[in-house]
Every structure is written in structure tokens, then in C-alpha cells.
Image (tube, rainbow, N blue to C red):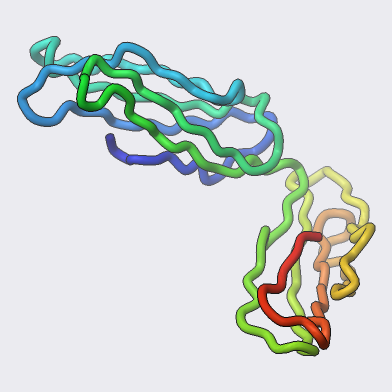
Length: 181
């Protein structure tokens, strides 16, 4: 299988996206794929027969499509190919991606590195509206953790904002530090 997993790079909500996977038999044993299963109603999988020679030694193309119904957010699924082989009854193809809504945040995560108690670090996150005509209200953080303060600066009126986040490690904190806002 080439590639062994599929990563959908730029997928926008309300639009379809396709990726192809090449499947070829190895060795001298004839093989066939009996079924293709997907675990998500937002991904379709179509197996295309690329028969070029003997029917027993054909190869295939697996066309994976993220449907326009996929919600914004992280996308993970496993597409399973069911074969007629006893040694390899099923082949898993991991499908990963991120469906972008009309509003995006960059970066989507931030690694802070090694910090000491009481240390303060600043990070900037950019919030953008995808459509040229789309308006975006200045973002806020409704219930920020007690270790986080923020300011919002307008970069492009009603379309892009920079959210400057100040993170202060609590004085008595030890061990792993992190959270979501």
C-alpha cells in the first residue's frame, strides 16, 4: 500500500477532498480484496480495479473522499480492506486530517518547552476568517484558566485578529503543565 496512511492536508468544511492509495500484491500469491469498510459516514472509499494482466495479479487504486458533510475539526478514521488471504485477512489504512471551518486558529497547539515555577511566557495565536467577505467578531476566551491572560489586537478589520496569550506557571507547580483554552 502506497502511502501506508493518508493525511488530508487542506480540507475546508462544506467541500470535498480526495486522496488516492495504490494497492499492489507482493510475491507470487494471487490476492483479491473482497470488501472495503470505513468507520465514518463522512468518508467514502471506492476501490478501482487496475487490471492490467492476469486477474489473479491485479492492482487497485483506493479513492478516499472526505465528504462535504464532514464537520470542522480533527478527522481520524481507519479504512479496512478485507482480503481473501488467510495470512493477511485485513489491511488497515489510517486516515488523518483536519477539516477547517470558516474560522481558523494558527497555531492549533503550542509547545512551551521546559519551564520553571513562576516563569512567564508569551505566545501569539492568529484567528482568521477564511472568506474575504466574512466578518469575524473579535475573539475572547470565555473562561481562561487562572494561569492565562490575553489581549486581542486587530490585524485586518473584521477578518484577522492576533490573540497574545501570557502564560504564567504557578509558583508551586511541579511536573507536567498544560491545558486547553
